Image: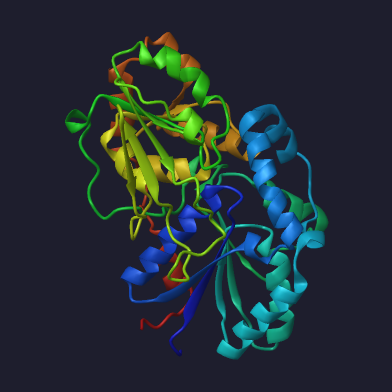
Length: 371
């Protein structure tokens, strides 16, 4: 087979459908396989794209509204900029692109158009589900296009029937830090969009024997505080805007410690929050897709906050069942025990089953020549 480029189709609507795509791209790159990462929102009509910032702010401010929106099916086809899409498909066809991985259901409409162009030359598409149940983009797709996966491969990281992990997306090649070598700190965040109940837990956690690494959503949340460190993605950064070198990259970030503010460039092969989480005793967060990947790769247990949508509820139940996470309320009843965190860390380290790397799994199924 000729040398091929794997096209990784992400979404910026939640960083859980963006960061794992970049991690996969980094893993392909380490194997000598070229990739291109694209973000769905780049192919929306301008007025729809402009509206995303309003939605993000509304969901950050009102978690109940966010959860309501997760239950409302949306036919995204009316928002796509088809003139731009046509240019993209022609470019793909000229290059004879055939290998794709999609992390968002929204891309399937575009992939279907490309498949029609390429017949009889088949394309290979992995539909990569990074949650343990269908996230809103997949649910909407299924409603309006019930047989959407007919020509594509369903690649699931998790098996909810068996409560097992099928595949993993590694973040780092290094071995997780032993629990006794970690800082007595907790990472507290609300996912890529700063959603959920995480802020309400800070006052209570501040009174316990843990330092806090709090991920702020914007500047007004990041208060200089001698007891905590505040972090955030650079507020100017946007997932669907390419960086200066024309690529989609991990977010640059800001650290606020006491009165000091330091800005850092994006890391080359993983996101900055993983490094903070890797040194902590636990992550206090809702169970989003990216958070599960961080938890597993760093062997850092999750203190589970209220989930966003039924897909995150399923994630919560999976992590709880595996012994990798505990609901916040239950941990509170245990007086915020360090010992419980250590047991969960050990459960992640000693997990049973094959540790199948998703990228290896992809390469084994789809004959790819390195180059």
